[in-house]
Image (cartoon, rainbow, N blue to C red; front, side, top):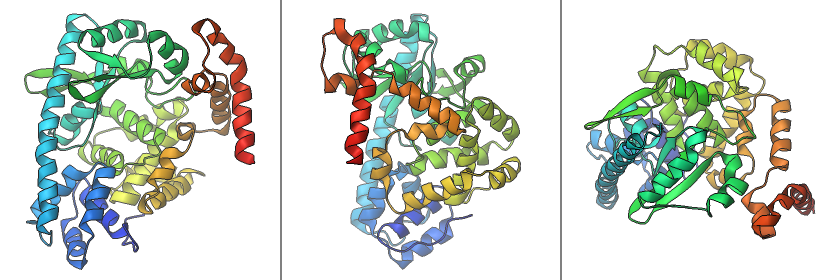
Length: 387
């Protein structure tokens, strides 16, 4: 499996992004596509959707901006200045948060965002991101929320009672700051309570890595744990952004010492072994990144992964991002077995969500009623969809 030239609107541009998003960009083939004619408006739009504008700018600069019209170059260079300044601001804000959490004695681990950009790409501005993700122990979540509020953050959805009642199953909550163009996602797990995840929270706390950002050393997810995190996150989100595939491919390329047999075994023990295989298959299918030898045989024997990887790659090339985002329950892809998927469906069927509240707004004293009404609401939605 490898990238092949496509035809049709957006296909050539997507193939060009795949060539430059590789751990080792294929500049000769990228130059050939540029000389053959590219819709630069579409190229820049797709690069933004897939979060690979820094890679695109770096490759075009390496090619001396060959065949790039002046307006397109100006648009990209303007974005680069904005992104560079924003990356520095987000890095500084993460350092401010880290110092505040440390002062209050609240353990935390940062992942994705600036920490991943530095740990994997070596530079704050070499990767696109918009959120700051923090993991804290579940028993300290209230302390962490109060600390964020003292720093000027406001919960994005409701008060604490509302979040615990209708959003707690997600095991994360978002906080915004009027003076900072970013969202802080506060986690106490990596997925909702209804689905498994390849990286167990206990393992993340047991083996904390570190990343250096300027004068700050921050706790983060590294090594095997990072492989499990990236595989789980990508699969949970249906790998709808090329940047997530690029992250996983870069980890494969930059850290050949990783024990992929151990990584897959750990994921399988959590009921998520296919997430690792899917990440490897997509890295090869879309970016031409050779997969670890230990994974090739497992993928070939898998009854599900090759077909799923081919379907996801096809949909990304076809520009079906909107339909991927609108699908419900894509996080069920985390489950290896149909039995685990069934359990996930049943768990979700009896959990209160914000949709239940919006459908019938009851006073807080009556919120337990939603446990009884939710199955009927879901059944009504299903019947409506059938009609």
